[in-house]
Amino acid sequence: MRMGKVMRYVERCMELDSKSDGRGDVSGRLPAAILFDLDDTILDDSGAMESCWREACAMGAAKLGSVQGGELWAAIEKQRNWYWSDPRRHREGRMDLRAASRRIVQTALSELGVGSAELGEEIADRYRDLREERLCLVPGALETLEELRARGVRLGLMTNGSAGGQRAKIERFGLARWFDHIVIEGEFGAGKPDTRVYEAVLAGVSANPAETWSVGDNLEWDVGAPQRLGVYGIWVDVAGDGLPAGTNVSPDRIVGSIREII
Image (tube, rainbow, N blue to C red; front, side, top):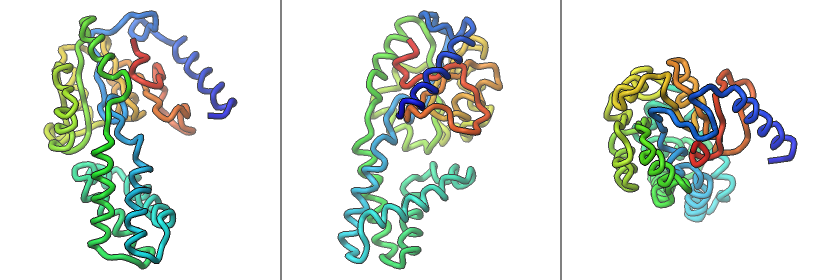
């Protein structure tokens, strides 16, 4: 970040911390319960996204011979941004990420006038395979969960996505043992920001909103929607860019990583 952006970010964090009530006291006081997001909060899900796409595009470009990897990536990025910008497509796509990636790549190839449906699937599948290979824990995530449990905080997990995909992540990294209750969109039948999700997790951890924090990287799903129920919202600013211009969500606290909440 440039110095001006850094200063604005620091000032915003100080402003939010100064607003802290008892639930958000940064002196070490913790709530009865904390509701966590999974992707890009506990797991580094998208940190390698661009490198995975570029590697898959390089493979595809080598097979095509008529376009460069960078050109293919630019076309895919355009389609990707369009695809995920619509809430309905987003809901459908996150239920089958591999199918969504195939659609994005095939549309990009069509716009470039090159390739085939088969090559589109190959590029998309290579991308998805790389994303799964490079998925990892956020540094300090397990230590944070362990410390919170040791201090008696009840923990809930709420994550959007397919039942199989999200449950596989939880099992792969042995996360279930840390949580009193887990809600996965594909299992539950609804996803964030549906109020039923937060109500279900709150009931699962036997906590009321006034004694609960919600922590995650999505401003609306993990902060704004829980706040409307009376939950203290902590935004994980993964990119470190500060609040986006025009947002209507005002987090109670901003952190760069969940390690900072204790």
